[in-house]
Image 1 (cartoon, rainbow, N blue to C red):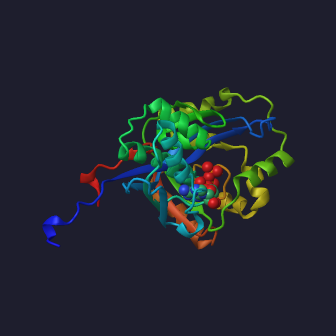
Image 2: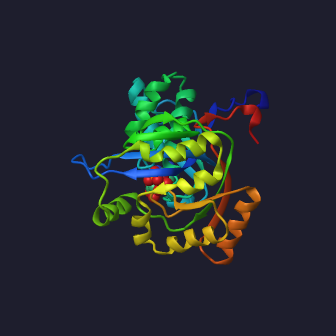
Image 3: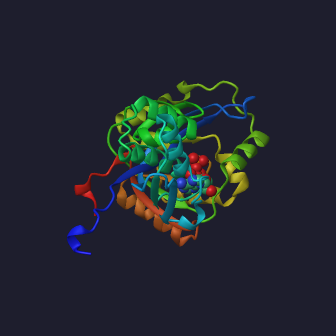
Length: 316
Ligand code: ATP
């Protein structure tokens, strides 16, 4: 065949969505519907997932591949949250879900940093653009909330207060940039197992009060990392440490290295430490590595943007 007659490649859309750390995570008592009410302050971080949605012939259905960090731990069938997101969007607009999704992971798997949720948020945005379905933002947010507690935050990014199951979001005012360093473990922690340990061990607060985070919100507005470090708060932390006692030492090591604050990220097992600068973040990471406290260290800044299409011109 003449090269001039070669078929043009089918279109694709590349989207990035951020992982998160919970600056504050307050957990209410287990409700009859099986969920815990939450009040949480999410911050999106510079570790991000990439999802590329490729056009496929009509009737091909959904298929999915995963590469990058810990890709071997991630399902490539319909149990993948990104696959569910593509199906949910297609059902919402009444079309067949025909797409090839390629996920490139950068967020530790089952690490309490919502990497899977970021994939789902990215898949929603990528499929909406690929299929030219132009779903209004409010409807994408509703679809996201139906897919999982952290998916809507993956769409919104930056810093936001989440209530309910964590999916009703209000943006928070933040000045400046914060330096984070994460200690990741190869072996994840199951979020439901951490909630079960929480139910068994802690007297969950019956009333959740956002007022408890006033000092943290002030530190964010002032761009004050010292104030933020002092007010980091995670009510799942003791439950995560009860399942993985080494996490307590990882936190102590970060504080020994001068971290402004250190907490378990979400349901763990990743530990997040707030640093004064990038150099300081590297020093905390080096201390963890020297003490053999984790399997990998990641330095990054926050807040980061929510799921967004990567323009063709800016692709490597
Ligand atoms: P969260 O803090 O939102 O509970 P997490 O960050 O602890 O999540 P994830 O990496 O999002 O954990 O995934 C948890 C589990 O979900 C994994 O062990 C995996 O089996 C499954 N999973 C489904 N889809 C994905 C995906 N796209 N990426 C990673 N894990 C996925």
